[in-house]
Image (cartoon, rainbow, N blue to C red; front, side, top):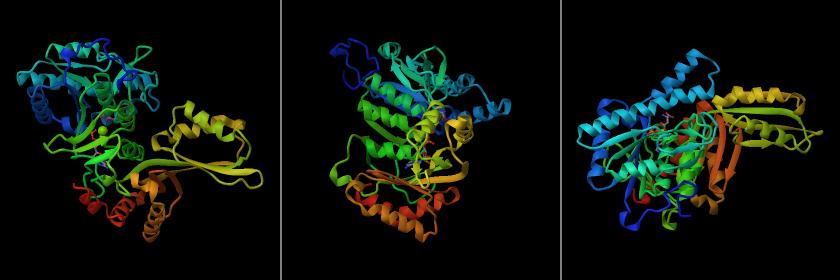
Length: 429
Ligand code: ADP
Ligand code: ASP
Ligand code: MG
């Protein structure tokens, strides 16, 4: 089936017309105003002039999506998800149309397309849709005519023919999925940092760029809050083996390559620190300790499309147990409504919630074989006087739930304690 998997590649593409396709994705800050759009146009034109066929995926200009969300909030406290998608999808269309104009002025043939026109088919989960199929014929024929193709990121058309969006940061996913469907040589993610760093450089100024990160590490980092790449985009890259290159829009330097695995020599105990500040915790106290309770709660939350993360259940005493879990802060109200709506189906004493939490995670391939990392992490947090509320681990990640106002301090203390700045240096950054 090849790496395009379930994305429909054209049935026959004669060998002799094999084309090198380059997918270039530009984030919101890269296209924030007219001058930046002209700058990106020059970069896209440069790639085309080198002989590549270029598909550029664009985000909405600057903070446009935030502005549209705020506008919807002003109109209604419960906007219909279908209409949110009609609204939010407009932002990336604006960028694409303007980019086409800028490219025309540079003497290039360019045409802009909505997600739907680009053949991106999604499921029907408005505002969090997943791409289920891509029909790339239209884009391939445009490329075949020598045009630069511009695709509005973060959107598609659902199987019931409505406009959908892919969740915040979803233009990354559009780009990687198109790269898979078009069998592109590379998917380049152009952004306002020069690559993937050992921590968010906005929080830790001493953070260093990592030259190579494995798919698995990047998955853990994205899931743990490193928003430089949307989680779903990394999942698609891994599934379809798409070479990913995260790099700067504003500088020519090599960025970070995300690859299947990193060579042994490159593996650090801890590669990076990720954090999330927009989380909330729900605790169900005195839950009847019987089979099926957890299944009932988490099925109801999943049916409402709420992504539950860290889960802890303590040992039951007197036939009752406490169950705590985290949800994204924007989903807290909905999650509490779901729990309240369960009534007698969820026999428990009390529900409490905390909307002031955050998470800090250490991620690294080398953690598999180094059991001491967790202990060091906890010691560092203790010496900072930071209380750990929950702990969650995978083979290459340790996550702690702490108070939101201590997240940034924790990131900086851990970066220093694990010497990540010089660790990255040792790896040749
Ligand atoms: P874009 O608009 O280009 O999609 P994003 O704002 O979504 O850009 O992602 C880039 C931002 O991700 C950076 O400005 C940086 O603050 C943040 N970030 C968080 N963690 C990391 C990390 N480990 N490495 C690099 N950037 C990170
Ligand atoms: N514009 C959307 C957002 O701000 C999608 C993206 O930029 O990737 O989330
Ligand atoms: Mg982004």
